[in-house]
Length: 353
Image (tube, rainbow, N blue to C red; front, side, top):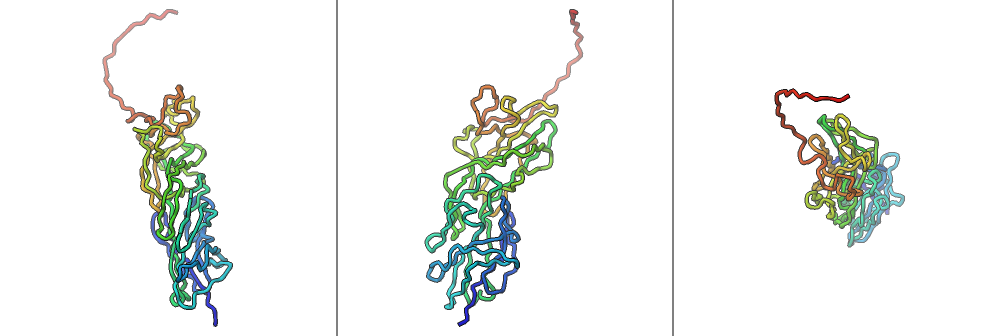
């Protein structure tokens, strides 16, 4: 009896930052093939840049037909595994679960069986440039339907992409920025491939783009993410830092912060105190609901204020530093003047030589 190869083609990756599915052609050959790629920095995955995917198949009895098989892109832009697999001759259905990049790149534990279908204990790398865009999908297929046409897989982004920009559209102050921080989001969770949902732990960390070349803000929003690209973080409803009731952030609320120096137009130092150094952090609480597959671009507008003093200030009790965690850096409102003009009054002064 002539054997027929099992063939699966990646038909699409739902890879636009927020939204749309990007359809591609399917291979009409006999072997398992796929499309796409994974970059080495925190850059979104697209159909064009996916090099490897990992697939598990379950048979009609919910037994593993094959497990976590790697499919690599060939010169024709199709993906094939080292071992070939064949469609069941009884025309029974196979269920497929696929993801990228590898579990070792993601840093979690992948288990796909009838009982469990999870990426467990996943935590994005703390260095944003080292983070990966995690994509996954599921599909079904059988010999009579998919032997020639293949099984189309539509991948979805399962993380949220975060970019931070900043601007200053006034002339009274100069803002020079050298680093940015995403403060205290949940940093660990387990993903369910069956329900395509996350179960979050309680762990929280800070994600920082470390010191980069000084950026002087102007009226045009400028990205503060450096060369590492946007952050790829676990979807979640953020709980904002309570800057009024919990200034030192004992409750680990979420916020954004930039490391900066503020001077007046004339060059007088405003923030930080010179005893602290050239730069220090200014923060603002955030309570966004991050959803999977969406890109969130935060533009911090310093036109009317400079936010709050860093809740995680290195030495908050320093008596020589007037800036305390949670305080407004420039006060509640921009400085205003009321002006009254009086008549000239001549006054004589004797000056001894």
